[in-house]
Length: 261
Image (cartoon, rainbow, N blue to C red; front, side, top):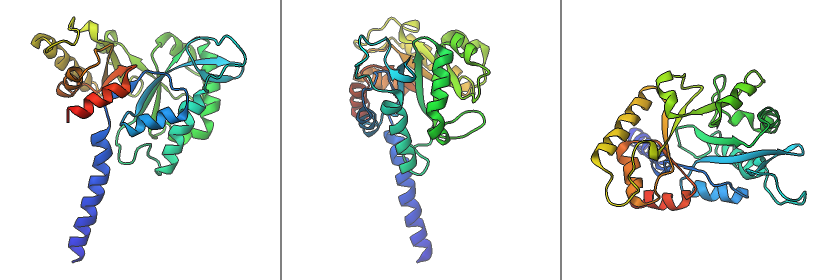
């Protein structure tokens, strides 16, 4: 009886852990959020990874690619739109942003300018949430990355050091440590001229598969960006085993991934 009860409990726990992993979508949402509710809505759709523009304005980090016209702007801060809602999930779920989700969650930040100033402010704003971070000396759940290597070089040496880098296709042959460069982003147009109508040419599909295999061999993940937004692309991402599509139309793509199940 005890053995049967143990097996039953174990099965329930396995289902609970597998459910979020299975329903997480391979999407990086590139649309700037204006409030915490947009992030929570994304999590509800299975979208767990994000990209945001960040600017330093009068002592705070705001989610925007450009300076607002007025000091009375209503722009959200990075903490309001991303850091606090992610951390509230992390604390509510006992150290997991999404219960049972096994991988890291990525927040890619595009620094508009002043990378050193932005990073110092980011480090200060991250202090209350630092147990959530993953970096070489600490295992959490959230990895914060940037795309500009020149900016990262300027920041390098400032403590604490927790930023990673999103690589490009040209970085593939450099075999950079995956702890420093966990993601490689490849524009769709670098691989294929296919625009999303009909089926992708077989030779282009093979190119994508080979690229995925090569990147995975380096223990990195691949992002495909600037892809068409349709169900065929969702199927392509899944069959090629690419890790992420980066898109402004994340909610729409989530629906296409749901429809391919």
